[in-house]
Image (cartoon, rainbow over the protein chains, first blue to last red):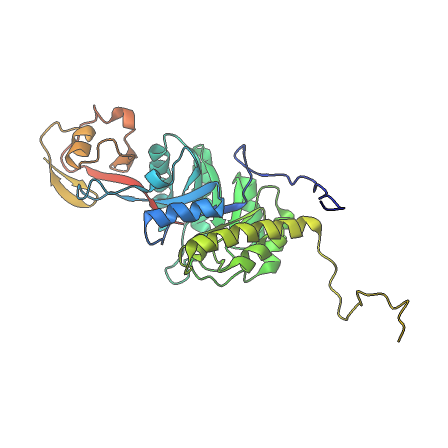
Length: 269
Length: 66
């Protein structure tokens, strides 16, 4: 028995999106895994409760017994977040969201992303704004992938987007957060959840996002393309929790020079 | 009657419905969504909705993505 029993920490306010609260602040994608079994195990290990997926054409009748993503990642267990990945116009993104809503029996939550170019997959913000407006008008709950421009982030919030999701670095690049100052400004100005979406490469990148005050992180490649995705999923879960606690704890101020941790008084030499 | 399904031409009997197409594609009972000429055809309308010559049909499902 310890003489100092653990002191309960003040409760953190859970992440709330579209009226649902989540214990996990890690959102994960389902792409780029070796197979569906690995997808399922990695998502389980990540502790994520919101899971993104893509909407694509079915095969024309070949291999009807092929397992489906939704058999492994059940909409009964997870909040499914359809994305508009691959869309380069507002029109295509809106079509994709409508198909996703039909696919999930009227589920309105979507991740809007409208891409600008193939090399960087950087968001096309003009088309993103057009699509966001139309989708919100049509009753969708929009979580929006966007550039890390604080003014555009605010504009998306004012339009009614439920969550602002700036990139940390290009999708699938694993470069980590390239402009932490902008992410911090977006967080400071926002009254809706801010999640870093894209660019995380390893656990410390996720921790940094959370230390900057983000409400969560959405990632896919960093887990799926790790040598051991299931272990990386666990690492990311812990990284997000660590970063959140560090943010809530409030870090010590940075100093230019040393400050001894042991007292000078009582030295005998 | 010829229609386009997921970008490929397909020959269907006149009066064929969305449900007939799903059966032909061996996708019955699967979770999917259907769009005809860029308009959603809700699941409840699949048995009644009949195709017309030249319809452009998309049949989509959920796959891995981030």
